[in-house]
Every structure is written in structure tokens, then in C-alpha cells.
Length: 283
Picture 1: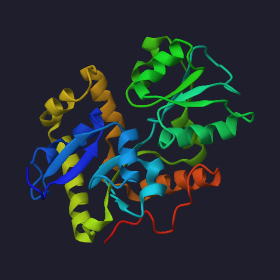
Picture 2: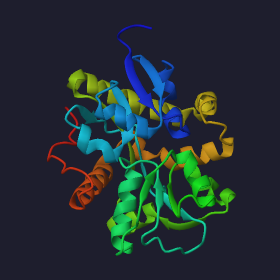
Picture 3: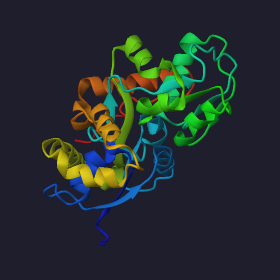
Picture 4: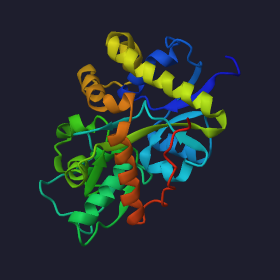
């Protein structure tokens, strides 16, 4: 391993391994070599806050704390429609007022969307919010450890296996109230790399996405190796849902969604206010 490799961390989820497969394996012409580490997004959020790694996949919700040191890349991340986090309960139509809700992180887009939803539909507010690893949330709801759970990732496709009910879809609420796509995961890179290098990284990420679309079979071994025993059909659903046109380019709607989420969250006191130029990409 050479010292000029860029240190990158992203999740082992199928959408990330699909997006980064070509780049991670040296198939993107002219792209810098990568030293890849895998970590769930709550871990990479913490890495970003501590200034670790050159490039990270993080939640959009953590951006207000890290944009002084990191720049948002305009590609490689996850936004979309019909892909929001879900609130699950044991009983259909449960009232969550004053109840305990498990969430995967308090520095996540899922959590911000949940709090914005709760502010609109639960005037009495929820009770305790309990943070736990996302793979423990559905069993905790099923077993009565908590009253409800906020779930992400492939749980959208598997919650019925736990006998649970969808109380609300945070993405549906967001889209209905804003008309914008749902901002989930962002790719950020250290500003200290310099504008030219950042533009190079953005182009490498964009090319890696397009190569994955052009040759989906090429990424299948990488996706399967890190999918944590996920059913291949579920992995394909996961990729189809989270890797879309916004992964190649945030575009006007993507940037509007990110700014809209963070401005609404700041108005609720959930995150610090975003600087006027904080989302601007160098160059």
C-alpha cells in the first residue's frame, strides 16, 4: 500500500459497494487509488466530526457540524423518492405520544425526518428516544423493549418478517410537505485536498456510478461479499432504490432537498444553522 492512497470509509450496504466497486478496484481511468474501510453510517458520521479519513460517506444530517473541514461532493451519495425511513410498531395505528422510540442515530437524516414528522403529527411529542444499532431495532420493537422503531436500509423490505406494522413513512411525509427528494447519504472529502483534487474525486465517483450501471454484473461479487448475508433479491431492490440519477449528480432538486432538510431542522433547533455557501462545491 502506498502513501498516496486516499483513505475512504463507506458502509457495506449494497448501494455503497455498487457505487464504489469500479473505483475501489482500480477500474476508473485516472482515478486516485483508494484505501477502503467499511463502517456503518453512524460510525462514519463520528469519523467526520473528528476529521478522520480523506473521503467519507455520511448522513446529510451531520453536514452542519463538518462542512468547515469537508466539502460536499455533488455525486456518489443517496437521495431519492419513495425511499424514506419507516416508523414501525407492534400494533397497527399505535399512538406514539409519550412513548419510547428506538432510532439508529441522533445524527442521521432518518432522525431529522422523524423529528420533523413528529412535530407535525404528534402535538404531545414522543417520550424517550433511545439510540441502538439499526439491526437491533426491529427485534426490540417485536419483543416490547421499545414502543416503536425508526428503521432504515433493507428493513424497508423485511419488517413484515418480524410481525411489525408500518405506522408512518418519513419519506412520504417529507415528499408530501416539500415536493423534494429525500436526502439520505452524502459523500464528503477534505477541503485541504484542494479544489483540483476535489473535482478529480467528484469525477471519479461519477464515473464509478456510471460504470456500475453500464456493467451491473461486474459489481455483484463485491456487493455480495459485504451484504451481511442479505438475500440477493433484497440487495438488488436496495440498489435500485438508493442508486439513481442523484447518485450521478445532485442537480438543482438534490441541492434544494439538502438545503431544505437542514434549514427546517435548524428551525426546529435540531442542527446548527447552515452557512450561506456551505454546500458550494469548489470550482
